[in-house]
Image (cartoon, rainbow, N blue to C red; front, side, top):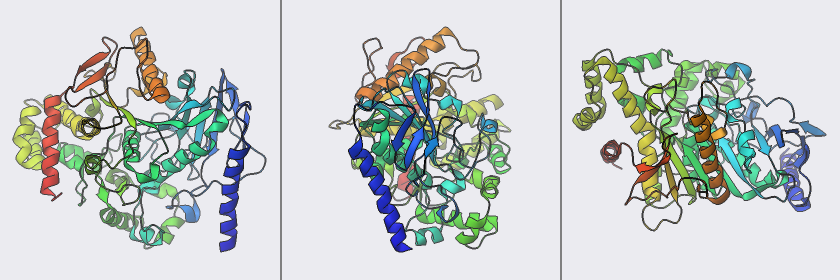
Length: 549
């Protein structure tokens, strides 16, 4: 059996090498192309070739549940990707459009939109990683279809990755059986496997493996950040775009949820009862492997399992239905392999994948995640409990004299701690004098019908992909056009600027300005909420000091 496995591995390597050597750069891209594993068939739609559901790894089922993604299994004949999308990974059906999706553990597939006519065009490639708190999401949502971006001269790839317990469960047994003595981070390993697949196969679709930009939002943005610091992702991409995500918080060595530090107590109670529409346990903290293993042991007990073998026999729906597990926040782990340390410190030590980045946040990120306190007094009490010696400064910066203000202040605290401060820390650390790569920082502030205080979390995605829906204006369409130009220029040149666009200067710590993405005006502006960002910088520095870091 061992010899058979070795021969199978060599067969996969042979398939890769043959494809690379036999590729003729003047061959036409068509509905039927050869990739690792066999031939796939797509369809030509409005001048763009579309390939739905190409397998990039073996199905992570049975004994492969909670293992690193394995090489794709070869198939006979033509793998038809012209029809419907492949299944999405198992999850709570909370994302908009989930009712239209199919779900299965066999979910490691990617989708491609390419405008290339020949394999030698060397077009830039944009690889999208979806968000969803590492608990949900899909590469197949209409919101993420790459047709409009592809019309601007780039290849768009959207990738599926495991989420929730299936993607991020750490457990001592899993660590012991791993050849690398780690567990968790399977979802991140899926992303890395997809990027490796792109490196080996994208020329077949007219792409340039030397010009791959990875981009994502929310948990996808956190993923992009983590990939920028992972040694396993080195060389897999030449640029990165992170929308509302950055993993620069300290490492959490206990199981206290970060959300407990910033939300009113009834919000925490609502989370525990599974009453809110989204998993609100998004946190900028990483946990060390041992802490994550302890949480994994608790999860196994909750499932009624005493061994990993028993867990592997259970249907995936049982894990998905566990709301306490969902709200407990399966999250990437500092395992020493995929994630090798505290990312803030890694950047201080210049230990990261040094590529140009385009990063930013939205003006009203936190409103999606906060609710009102029962009273002003409760809000003040919770802030004092959560922020300790920083409470007076937090209350001065985020005051509340009415019930309504407890909501807006909690929302703004969430905006700063979860999204804006990590992004600011990223920009600051990567743009200090002497750094080679450039940082382009944005602030999306386009008013949204559903968010009277500004741009809600995730509201920029429709503008990025050019799929505006609902009651949109001509100004919205024009802003979407500008954003798509910036994003695709960055993928093409490592610089978002172009002749017909407002000039976007790289971020500079001596002159901290950002590109304001708003229909009027869209221009550079001073760093928004700088006083609050500096307050959070002090808070996180103090938190690290208190933890002996």
